[in-house]
Length: 200
Figure (spheres, rainbow, N blue to C red):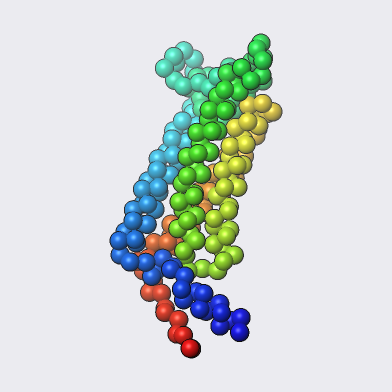
């Protein structure tokens, strides 16, 4: 009796492959536009953080380059190794430039990144996959976001080595985004969803 009930539940769940054309077009546009945004974010990370930190020689006197508050590192470098330990603040903790920087950075990114995966999670709910897989695809990106943003606070106020947490955090939500995108586009446009037969 339970398998019968499960088949009927699947029959009435509007999986992506059974969506009408306009709904598929909207979902596809969302996936593509968010994908472009994710690629832009990756490009910014490479240009602003990875290349200056690991591949450029340290120079001085670049007044136009961005430097994170509290860092005594070369201004051309990204903020991957920046730390509040470089400069002891003289004011209260919550008034320091480091605290304000971390607060602004995390609150902006937690809204933006969460917004992306709220939308992707809503679409992932309608994938023609098991409930367990869909649950993981919905939950894991938010865990990655929390790890990524926690690294900002830890690398500034604890030790610069915590910047490495950006790697697993970012890779987690980026990988889930890629898996989501492939599965969604495949189910909407490349795979014909079989209609279960009802036995009465």
